[in-house]
Image 1 (tube, one colour):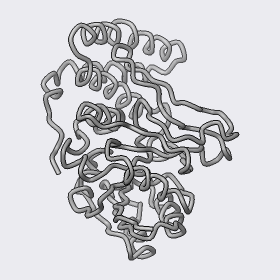
Image 2 (cartoon, rainbow, N blue to C red; image 1 turned 180 degrees about the vertical axis):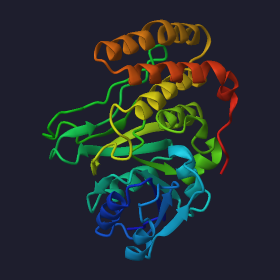
Image 3 (cartoon, one colour; image 1 turned 90 degrees about the horizontal axis):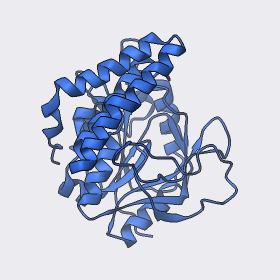
Image 4 (cartoon, rainbow, N blue to C red; image 1 turned 135 degrees about the vertical axis):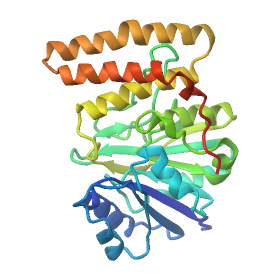
Length: 304
């Protein structure tokens, strides 16, 4: 079988141990024509990323001078990658040996597809879904739902189908699409940049797909602390920014009113009632950032 070159790109931030486990799983895959890029996003002192290169001399290790965020870290590698397809995948994942062939085959046979994500299980809960596709993002509430979330896999999502958006933990994208549409927009820093990218790719006339024949196991958010002020700030900052960039006309007005007057106050109140005033303040900072940086919405995606 013809195997076009796939560039596998992952970003490390203070989690070399997880990156090593990920690369160990990659060594077992059956797809042979790959190149691997590990981008160290200015990890804190104490994370010996050079150890990764020592253990896996076949990889290309790229180091940044500062933390460029999810999009910025990935884009560093995209500029050097040579693959016909580029796989963006979290370092806190482990892959099945045959995970890559179905997605490559799908893209090879259907040039109208611009992105594809695999079936994703929670790593520590066997055969339990984190992702089997997304519903479309509501242009007013900026919410969507992960199909299959928390369900046991009984074969119900062994399908290949169009989906509402992409999952940034693992997404395969043709190089030609990146050349046409541009790379991920770096203004997000963390969260929602893959959804913003998927929207741009859809507007360019491509489809977003889920491939249930491919399996990835996700350890989920080990590089950010769940329910930390860091996570809550960037998650809600990104949600508002996504609305500003992708909702239009009257729907955009409704979305801004909903986010600023309903959703964000409601979330803040919930945190306050739980005594998490640090998280409530993170919501305030997320809103303020979007109000202050009103021109950031105009930032264009970097070109390949």
